[in-house]
Image: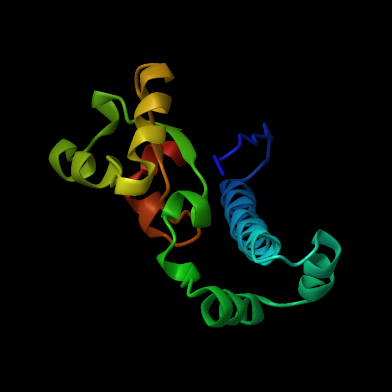
Length: 152
């Protein structure tokens, strides 16, 4: 299944609120994708949609991980980051914003995984200059430390 686009425009008064909101959105990507991965694996194995919903209703992440692994041989943590973390579009720093351009460039340019390379290349062709796509963890501090210009 191809990724779909879901975007929001929000205004928050403080940087902490923005980071919390973006982290919540990425956590939501994980929750929804894990559910859908389980749901469609069950349906693909011959279980009805209603039965799949009933099986998954009220379950937590550990149950879904075990279901995927024990019944379908899928290790959820090995799925491509594009599905587990979603896609983040962000502006690259302007030359005057990069205090150490070599270090910043090394960290801001995203790793492209083999599974999502075709998707990302199509998106990159259509992005305005200076905008990048990645599937990085925005919940932890690393992304924000490497991209301080996004919080200025």
